[in-house]
Image 1: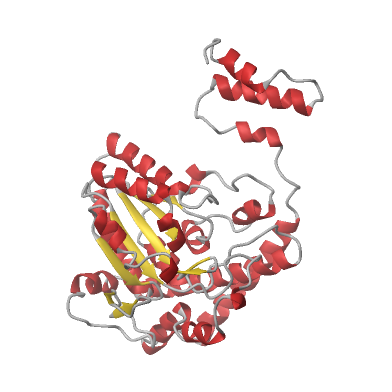
Image 2 (image 1 turned 120 degrees about the vertical axis):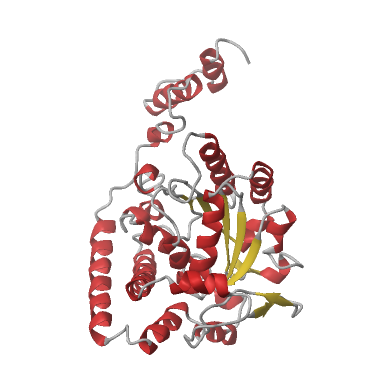
Length: 389
C-alpha cells in the first residue's frame, strides 16, 4: 500500500487489512503477515471488543465533559486500531509512556476507567500508580515524556535484567504528529539512537496538530524522522489493527534483543475534535471527515471477523452490555470523585528518596498556606543546600 502527503508523493505504507476488511498479501509483507496470522480468532475478537469499548469510553467521557463533570477531554475516536493493536504487542513487563490521548492503550493495560479520568476532572495530578501497570501517567507537555521514556529505557539497559526474548523489558512512548516538531522528541531520539536504548517511538499521525495539518509541519514523511537519527523506521496504516500489531511486535522484539530503538508512524485520522475545547469544523471539511469514516478501524476489523464467521449477534450483544456497564461505572465513579488533591501532594513523588530542596519548598508552601509570613523561598532553598548558592 502507498499513501500520499500534501505533494501527492507516494509513501510506502504497511497494510495487512484493507478498508473493506480483506487480508492483504502484498509482496514484501510476509514477515508481518506471519505475525498477524499467529493471532487466534479469540485474539481478533478481543481486539474488536477492546476497540469498541475504547470508543464507548471516549463517548462517555465527552458527554461527561459536556455536562460539566470534566474540565477537559481529549478524544481518540478513529485511532482505536493504532492504540489497541500496538498495546496487544506489549508484554506486562514492558513500560508505556503515553501522552494524553492513549485511552485504548490504557484500556488494554488494565487501568481502571475512572482512574483514567481523574486527571481530566482535576481530582488528581496523575490518576494512577505507574508501577501497578508499568504505565506512566498522562503528560500534557507536548513531547516531554519522550525524554522520560528514553531515560527509563537507558536505565533498563544498564540494569541486571537480560535482554533476551524471554526476560527482556522494552519501552514504548506514544506521541502525535505535532510533537515531532518539539525539541524534546528530537533530543530523545538522539539519546536513544546513540545509546541503542530499548525503546520504540510510536507516532500516531492523526494529521492534525490541533488545527494545523501535517502539510504545515513537514515537507517529508514523518517516519523519515526516525531514519535521520539512524533507527529502523516504518509507516503503517494506523486504521489497520493487524499491521499495527505486527509492526509493533517486531519493533519491541528488536528492543528486547538489544538491537536498539525503532520508529513507527501509524498513519490514521482524528475523527473528532483535538479536545472538547476545539471546533474542527473551523479548519476541515465534512467531505474529509466522511472519507475517513469510510475507513473506520472498528468497521474494518468487524468486516474481517464477519467474513471469517467470528462475529455474530450474540457477541455484539455481549460487547454492548459491557459498554453499558462501562458507561454506568464512569458516570457514577467520576461524579463521586472529590474536588482534588491537596496542593502539598505536589511534593510527594518528585524524588524516590528524601531531598533537602523539596523538603524546604514543602515547608515554605505549608507555612504560606497556614498564613504565616514565609521567608523568601530562595533563602529556604539556600539553607537546605548548606548555604551554597
